[in-house]
Length: 71
Image 1 (spheres, rainbow, N blue to C red):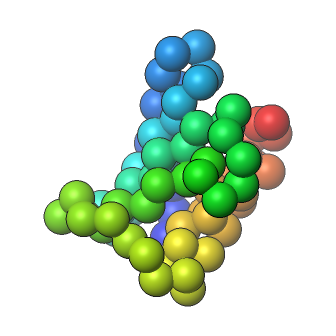
Image 2: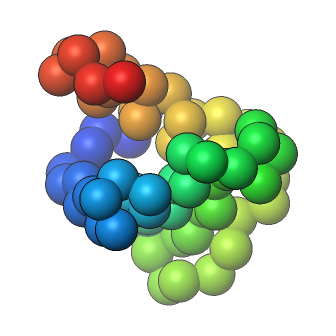
């Protein structure tokens, strides 16, 4: 399972960039609806479309939010 390395809050929280320990990153825009909220990228910067990999990355983000009690 991937683990969070860092998180950047940009534009006063309007955009968030999560970096995971395997080199992947997730861009989140909380104002958008579910389908368009997340963008997933692999270590080379290519978009990730495979649902199982996206699910694993989302689980790492949710674990981080639960651990640090973030909204």
